[in-house]
Amino acid sequence: MKSSHVINLTAAWEPAGDRAAGWIRRFGGPSGVTAAHRLWLAIEDADRRVTAILNHRPLPQATVHADDAEGGGRRPTLRWEVTGIVASHNTLILRDPGALDREPLAGVAGDAFTGDARTRRTLPAAIAARVLLEIDADVDRDASLDTRR
Image (cartoon, rainbow, N blue to C red; front, side, top):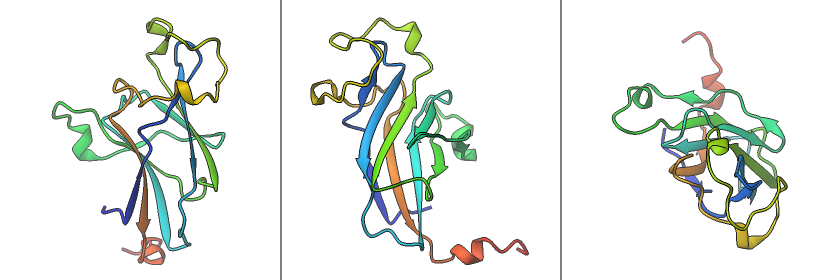
């Protein structure tokens, strides 16, 4: 699938709590999106155990494509269709399954989201290489609902 536009969400994450049991990324909704578009959240080279929450809605188990499932030295790309969930203001939380095995992060106290720009950082590679919001122009959206094929 070729995206018509991709928004990179890999930078500007904030740890949730001193062990970063979750990572929080706030972002605005894409402009120019119409009913003919589909939105996808893609997490590349991801730990399969990562869970995602978008705008207070836990996302179901991610789709893993067959190419990714075979391995090849790289972790899979996790994908969710989020067309009906993305709003003008969004909060994405990724829960890190390995957080409790790590030492606390320096300079981050407690369990609360700080909202402080000084704590923003690139998402740790242990969770994923990149986080993307993909916008696809779906010219055949009605045809894709046809079950007679």
